[in-house]
Length: 444
Ligand SMILES: Nc1ncnc2c1ncn2[C@@H]1O[C@H](COP(=O)(O)OP(=O)(O)OP(=O)(O)O)[C@@H](O)[C@H]1O
Ligand SMILES: [Mg+2]
Image (cartoon, rainbow, N blue to C red; front, side, top):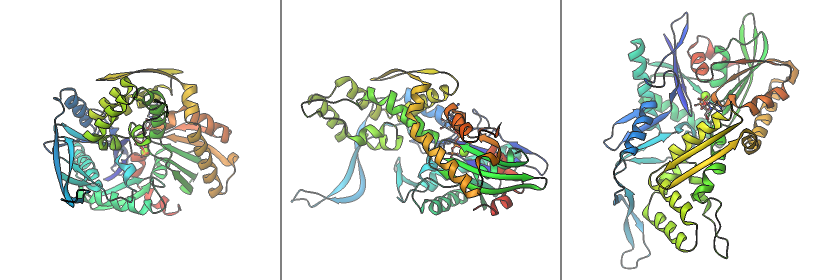
């Protein structure tokens, strides 16, 4: 049996090939084949993965008690400005009664140069360990569903991981160590769009595979003849649907939390890093400390709008970042099939009722569309092809449902026919198929 694992920014899936056919496994007991790439660690140290993790997180937070802040020593000494006491033991004033911590979009951090360890209820966990918890869960599900706990695995990787020049090597090394920690022994990597090309029966001739996910856009040009598929060029970049969701958060939610407020004769505004944290769960949790919350109260005394800052305070104290992201993400998805969508979100002091039209969303993502256009031009140039040479476009990845994206591709490749591969599972299926590694050998 061959296993293919697509560890995606938003969703993870696993497929198995038994030599004759390929099957995608329902690894998530609630969500099925498309498991949200989400990890939830409760304060007692237990870990949940996928849709059950999200459910547990939401339930714990619905039923959580009041915030209980306490000083927590960090075990390191820091320089202090007090002459009597030149160093002090570092501490944070933190919410110790938080029921758990939620992790999402972990793949985005794989190429990050910082070796950060996250304090998870007293134990410091590195990124590899967090990802390993997810991969180990998938491996255990493989055992439950097929009877085999795989040691060999073909793992998908974006054409380029998010990050600077050296991100790629760092990211693959880390992902490989995470897979080892999870119990896999023999790990091979294949570019995600190459896997999708294998799963989608591309037409005879030259096709463009367009894999547009949550974190990255991955392109691949393949040529199929009677003998099989050959990869002609690949291209990829940090152009993901998550960025579209973030832009929509800035537009419809953040203003209700003070992002555009100005006050006083000097027309003061909230610092950028606070506003930006609203769409970044990681940064939002870093704000959850008493000095910052006190500073928000000071701003209200200095004339900042009370309602908006109360809402911001709720979002920080109750760590609503994930919740807000999911609600706005759903609104974005709705705009793929409807001309307008409504967001109604009420939690503690946060009150948002907003409507967005598809036209407004398309204006918001104009820069993203420009980047997509440039990447398509790149891959065509690398393959030495003209637009008319492409006979078919194969779409996969959740974000490929965005109508403006399809319209752009249609404009660039007017003669290509369109094929839809399974949006959330074609990469995993392709990774499990025999021969997929050989095809990559020809890719750059
Ligand atoms: N109908 C839709 N319209 C627009 N976007 C959608 C739709 N459905 C899903 N998405 C978006 O698709 C993304 C997830 O897609 P997918 O599962 O293919 O990504 P991934 O494989 O996890 O990420 P990556 O491949 O970048 O690592 C999310 O950004 C989600 O908001
Ligand atoms: Mg993907």
